[in-house]
Image (cartoon, rainbow, N blue to C red; front, side):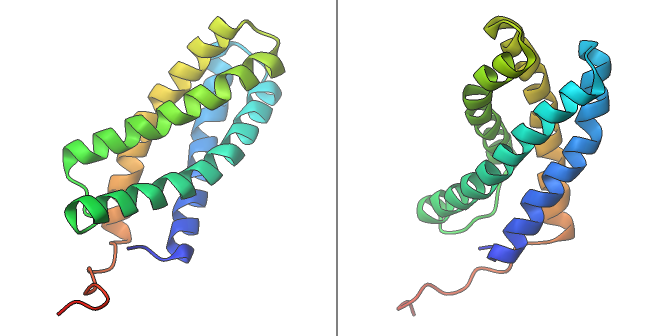
Length: 145
């Protein structure tokens, strides 16, 4: 499994690169001030960073329990990215609606569009991250032969 330091590098680099992409794109696509999209993006990225760390830790533990290792197949990567974004969507849509003074439906549409971007981004980012920073080889289980 990955170290805490590696997980922190992963979460922070994921969010920083994502912000560089999503703030100007969001302001342009939703015709909102860059500052408003920036505040929403930074606040949600902060929440997403914590979620990223916890979700990936839990996901890796689940994979290790279920399959004995943390290697992700292509279908597993798709499931991983979709469930990550679904959790954020449920938690952040109401916050976006309140901050931007828009309806819950408008916030859902906006958050869904951003989430769709992040599903594709998460898939590509995590794939490239695993290529650049491969997970350490599986160690023998404690007490095993």
